[in-house]
Length: 558
Image 1 (cartoon, one colour):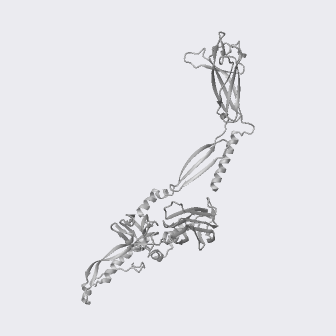
Image 2 (image 1 turned 60 degrees about the vertical axis):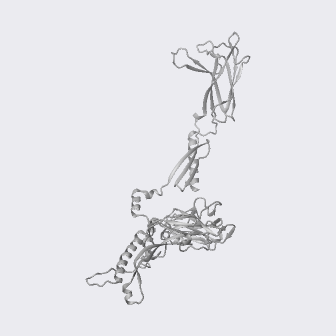
Image 3 (image 1 turned 45 degrees about the vertical axis):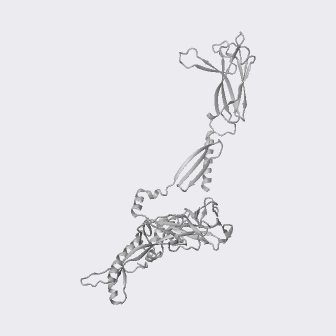
């Protein structure tokens, strides 16, 4: 399989007295090598099995760890020991320009080993002839200064629809979306901008046209990318979503007209030469089955020879120009994800459900109180780095009757004057006005009812609770009866401040009344008027449910 083309498999047939030649021994090796490589290619695919990590040692040197890979025609590529090399010493690296990205690749290579004198050839030739006694299955590291096309990878061809919007001057802009989609499914479109570190800032925007698709989210037909001023990346991704048609069996299209695209590199506008169109098939069967159908319909030539000349890209190395030379700024290992996973690992992941867990979404929620009468709110944030949704619910506080009543007490000390036992609020005064009292029902009109509170401890055993009684209105109507209070004859009044949510209590002593009390306790009750326009509790709950459904519908449309 030196050229990847399959020949019919032949193996030696041995018989007694057979004369074995070089051709026979080579056929023996080729038979087993070609079969193993064919199975490698078709069963396992291509990519790194283990190791081969690339790290920067200093500004101009990289190190490649030992490892094993299978190339695109099934040959095993083995790096038996770590290798450290300067970039300038690696095949393919040129010194014509330093502000660029270079791609370190590995490929299978064979080398002769152990040269020996060829006795047979010396008998027929006059000069001395040497031949290699061994063939070393080795590897070759080299540099590509051109990025591989994303569509050149086999699995990308099967699963993705990729178009190039612009590629020139160390800048490449591509757009990727799934090749197949189910009816009504939301499709993620990825705009990928690749550049070198020293390329000036890039701004790119375009308007797109849809056929079959519908906009979802915030795109609304216009996509814009602006590279941050302090960015130190060589690749940026912008995503937006489209919704596929509700019926299967057809196609949906996304068109980016060249005249509606604007690209700026630095301060210079750059024209976009051609329009691009991506077409997706809307399938009625599961997408995975449609992809497997393409996989199974490949010809043997497509399966084996399609990528015969392709190497494995181990790292993308970003270079900075430093005067007349360069330095390694960044190393991105395996930029195209060319790995081969163990079948044992994938089977165990499938059995344990680990594969499904990789696509699981998580959610957290919190609530906040809103003022009564406000509309419910729903705020949702998605964190793609951890597959998590944050829900924040704003729920208006309900208004109930028992929330409109408040009560409390206020005590005023009395002062005895003279020998008659008369009690006054202070020396020479017969009235008293309290400080502002907060009733706790908020702003608005309230009604205040006040009364004098008396504690009667007579007739109770030691330690028993005192008996309380409150007198509303004129307490002197009880004079001369068994219910006559032992408190001064006081008239009460109130003043309310609706805008503050407070009130004051005023008291006036009516004449000179004998009493043993030293403190007047005033009990107050505050009632907030609901008014004729207030809604019942049932009406409030119905309105709350309606507002909540409206907020959720608005969020789904967004």
